[in-house]
Amino acid sequence: MSVYTVKEVAGLLGKHEETIKRWIRSGKLPNSYRNSDKEGWRVLERDLLNLNKVVPVQKIEPQQDVEAGSGFNEIELVRLAYEAVTLTSPTDEILSILSVVGIKRTLEILLIMQQSATRVKNPDGFIKKAIREGWSPSSVPVKLPKKQSKRLIDLTQQDFDESIKTENRYHTPKVPFYNWLED
Image (cartoon, rainbow, N blue to C red; front, side):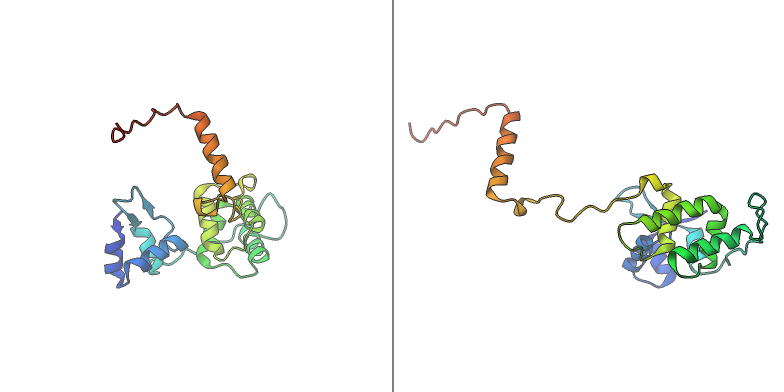
């Protein structure tokens, strides 16, 4: 399997490098990875094939759900669950991904999406990331308030003085300054 740099992908597709990086961040190239800042992003060939629709998304044959014993097959249940949470119809690609992981995992991922602190703008990217990183409903990401961490410019003089006092408790005494000019 071939691996391409962002610059090579941009040349192949006739797009700007920043466009390719934006696609990586949005989840259009879900299997992209980065080993280091120096090497940069690497894009797998199968992502490019899926992106260009050179390889059509496989249509999954409906299989009856034996455990449920109902008239619904698993793919139909996945489709209904996705539509109930996102209020949109799933694409063939996301439907094939969700049907591979199964109805139980699909419901867990959709529960995570529903519990999200902010509205999910890109449900397909969210689902792919949840599958890739193994999120569970008990490990839901929590959004921190913007004012959680104070920067130096946000500190008042009193806060700054208190932070200096706590720093001085843990430091060793400094060597006294000898001014040789006064001698």
